[in-house]
Length: 326
Image 1 (tube, rainbow, N blue to C red):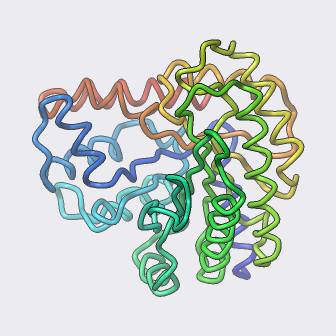
Image 2 (cartoon, rainbow, N blue to C red):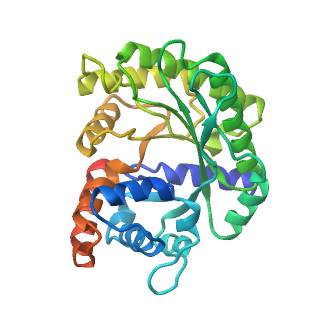
Image 3 (tube, rainbow, N blue to C red):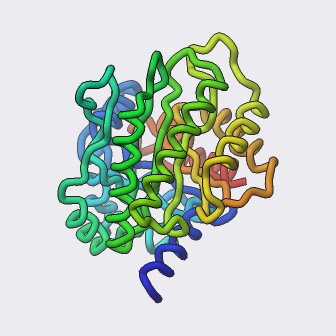
C-alpha cells in the first residue's frame, strides 16, 4: 500500500460513521486549571491516572476512532507499564498527537496570535510515527473583533497549517487541520459566518499550494455560532443550517470528513448541534466530532480525583460518546 493510500484509509477511519475523536491533548497548564477547579492535585501521576481512566473505559471503542494526546500523555503508560499508544491501538483506536507549540503573539498585530512549532516538525513527526502515532493535530485560532481577524493573521495561520499538513503527509501521518474561530465576543451569527468563510477559503488555498492531498486529511472547524456575549442566542437549527451552508461553500468534497470541535459548548449543546447538522444530510463529507471538554467534563467531575469513582466516571464517558456517536 502506498503512503497516499494509507493516509486516505486512516483519514476515512478517523471519521467512520458513528465514531469520532476524543481530544485529550490539553497542555499541562490547561489540565491543571481544570483539576484545580475540582480540588484535584495536578501531578504527572494524577494526570496519567485520569487519562488511563479515559482510554480504558469499557465500550468507548465502538464510538471513538482516535485520541489526540499531548506529548506528556503520549510518553506515559497505563498502570501495567504499557505505553498509551499501544493501549489505544490494541482497542482499535488510532493514536494521535498534538504537534504545535501553541499560539504566540503575531508581530505588529492588534492582540492577534499565530501558531508556532514548524521548527523541527519533520523530525518530531518521524519520531511520533515510530512510537505509533497515526495522525497529528495543529490548532490555529482567530478572534473576531474590530478589524479582526486581520488579513495578515488569516494568511499567517493558513500558511502554517498548510506547511504542517504537508510535513505530516510526507511523514505518513494524517493531519487534522484545525482553524478555530473563537466564540469569544458579542458578535452575531452572521459575523461568525463571514469570518469562518474567509478563514476556510484561505486555509484551502494554502493547502492546495502546499500540494496537500485533501483526501488524506481531516478538517476540525468550529461551528458557526454567535459570540458568547451576543445579546441574541441562536437556536440549534439556526446554528446547524448556518454551519452546513458555510462548509458547503468552502470545503471541497474530496475532504473525507469534518470533525467538529466543541469550542467550550456544554456537552448537551454540542451534541444537539452535531445531531441537527447530521439530519440536514446527506453531505459530501462525513460529519464527525473531535470534542474535548464536551466529552470529558462530565466524566472529570464524576471522577474528581477519587479512584473509587473510576467506574462511575467511565460509565458517564461511555454514555456521552454513545450520544455523540449517534
